[in-house]
Length: 384
Ligand SMILES: [Zn+2]
Image (cartoon, rainbow, N blue to C red; front, side):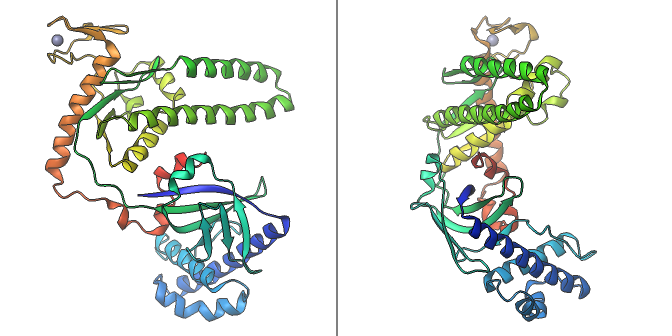
């Protein structure tokens, strides 16, 4: 399992200036390597190294040797992406890659020590309390990022831990709705009263501020959108944490990724789907499940709400608003609960299919190269 933790670094103006100069030298090293590789039609890391190492050392003598290497590696990767058809360029203040030794991060102490053109920079980071669970994870590489607008530096620390062995056990079906955030097939309901009331308040304030249209109103709108996003993320964290800790080894969810294109989805539902970040819920649940040796499986959402979870009879008339009553066997229950039981059943079928197709399925994360790991979508939830 690999996660990237994005942390803000507490730096003095002097340290910031050093890091900016380091970025400039790093970019220069990148450009030299990229040019050489392009002119010599070669993106091989060893060949480029022999071709440019001394030139770079002469050109930017203060850049630590290890950063010369990562700048050159990044140039080679960019050359490969461009298929040597053009010399890749790099924004002067784009992210720099640091290997483990050049950016020593102590999660338990909250300290970071970075190599720079002016020697080692020692500083502290703000660690959200939630990151305590990464204390014993192995720190791999880091990315140093600069946000020009805020004039702040961030460090993206890649941490790694072996995934615990997967448990064998029961499947929990989860139906995600509008009026209820989630309904689980074990009769646990997560209603969205609190979320809807808070979001309703935000919507009202937003409308008032938009009507005003002044500059300060615009600024407040922006601040508010940040707060609302954090509130929603926090609620998603709370709910997915509770679900992931339930005594099930597989969580079945409807695959809602193409739902907006489905014919049976009404316009109103589409609008509502856009308002609630379902993908965030999926991401949070997936990584929490993975850390506990569990997994998430996705199923086809067609018919989950119209089918009877007891006899399997499918009929639109089975469902009347929030209540389900089977026209064939007269089975009655909450409509979302009925859906969640169907989802659990389909999840079981899907799991059987997965097992049949990949008898020796392994974790494919090991195969990723460093460059790809940073773009993993699983990293996003941590960048709150
Ligand atoms: Zn029935």
